[in-house]
Length: 201
Image 1 (tube, rainbow, N blue to C red):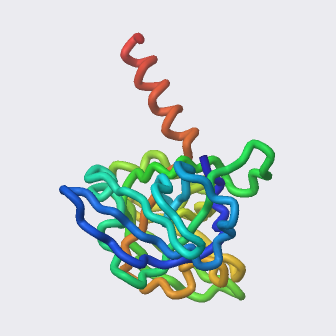
Image 2 (tube, rainbow, N blue to C red):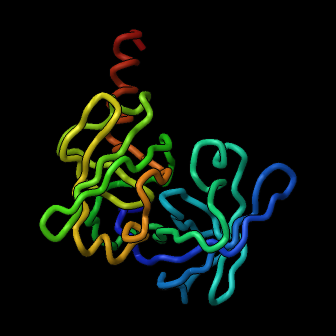
Image 3 (cartoon, rainbow, N blue to C red):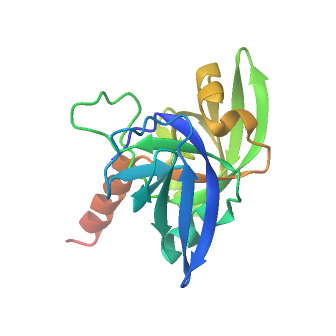
C-alpha cells in the first residue's frame, strides 16, 4: 500500500527481456534506500514492484507480462525518469490517499498550461475507467496522488503545484506522454458492491 506522495525520483538503468517478461533495473536516485530489505515493495511510476536484488544505487524487479500489458513500464527506455515511493508503514502519515500500485489503465497528457505558480494539466483516460473518476475525487498519475478538478467524457483535469513539479518526473514530462492511472480504491469497491446487489448476491 502507498500514499501517492513521491519520496524520490530515479531512472531506468536497464530493461532486460527474460523468457517473455522483463527484469528491470532502477537507479534509486533521490529515494531514501539505506534500510531496504529483499522482497519489499516499491512503486515505480505508480506500479507496485517487488525488490528482487539491490545495491546502494539500484534495485532489480521482475515485471510480469500482465504488468507490461497494462502499464507503461514496457515502454520505458534507459535513462527515463521515474517516480518512486516505498511501501507505507503502519506508523506513517497518510498525506495523499490509499494507493495500491495496481494500474487501472494507461492515459496520456493532452495539455499542460501555466496557472499562477503551478500548472493545469488535461489528461486523456481510457473509456473503461471514466465511471470511477469524480470531480474533487482522487486519482494517481504515474504514482502521484492528485485531485480531479474537472472531468469530461474521455478526459480529466488536475492542478499540479510547484512542489510536485520540482520533486517528481512531472517537470520534464512532454505533452503526449503515456501515463499510468490508478483510480480511487473506494470507487472500485463501491462498483463491485453495486454489481453484487443488482445481481442479488
